[in-house]
Image (cartoon, rainbow, N blue to C red):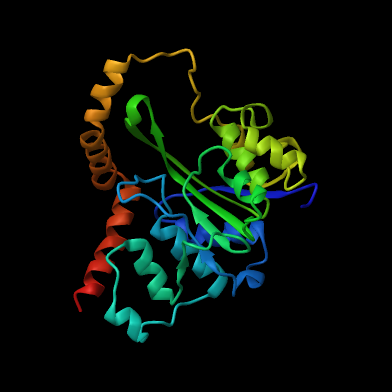
Length: 268
């Protein structure tokens, strides 16, 4: 890994996100070098919320940046097996199979905001992506009992160094990467990447790196009974949070547009 890893970071909006992903990829890597790189996404739970999954505009924007224009409408397997999942539908439209099972080693890895240490863990297991692209336009925070909250942050990130990107994203959470995240510290010590954000080259809207999106309050204790009651309300709370996002935010409106196109195509 380079001693001076590059991390690209941009602020974006629903109306500009496709163009901003093209800018992001250009800042982080040479798009031409990625044209034939496989696309990998993490496996996500069916009830995952925005911020915990890749998004359709993320796949769309990245593929536009590295491939130019889709020409796959005639693929018979797509016409016979259209997907109602907006992310999979976008991939099908581009004629791309999203890799979920073999891992992201050497791939272009698209994900939502990962857990601290997750990207460093990939490097430690020999599964470092060729380029990691993180969509943090919406951040999902889960409190006591898994109760969710969605915050609009409008940020996107990309880097060839998953450890450096892990460190920056962890710092945005209010953590000290090398002190608080053992997996990251180990990868840094093994020189699998740079866990010292101060040594990374930040390009794009670098002021994002100085933000603190939330802090962990380790002093707050929650009773077992309260936790049980919160878990009992978890699914209902998640549904309400998702409905508020999908019907009352610009990102939710954009998601519904991709969803409508997937449903319309499947109905042909």
